[in-house]
Image (cartoon, rainbow, N blue to C red):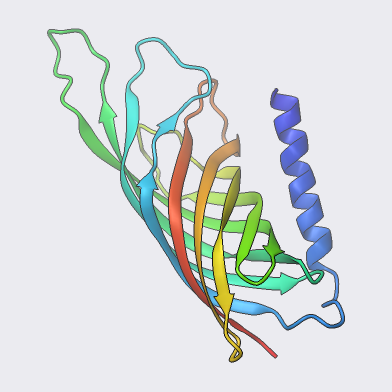
Length: 205
């Protein structure tokens, strides 16, 4: 299972890198730059192998602000990247004996993310997107394991581009962080996020 995870994420990164180096295809519009905001979902963290007696980390809200860049590859595929900042609040529920204080408390994660994804345009109004993410967790001390590493995401949604080159889109998504953590732990927590991204972009000439 671990080997297949490494192979899949390495393939996504290699494919994204090679596609980004290609020139714009003939007959396709220019690259896009944009901004976006995401929230309205869930963001728990947990290891894939549960440890008996460990605390639980449930999602208590998040938001993401980002800059996007999309480069056309073919008439249907775009390569997507950019930079985003996310703040995640999690509710920690200690798992302690009855005679000890097990009051839940909140903790925060602050992440910078560089996506390396592909977008499949399904006609004029819908799309699918997915690929890898490079994450940097800026926290130094946190009960949740550091989320710096390589993750993956998948999304879909509607979008529309006006003749002026301005586009609006809505992108529901799922993200799995630290699938390949830079500092792994035996029972490493993975931040699992579902949310909705709202974005606007402009096509460059």
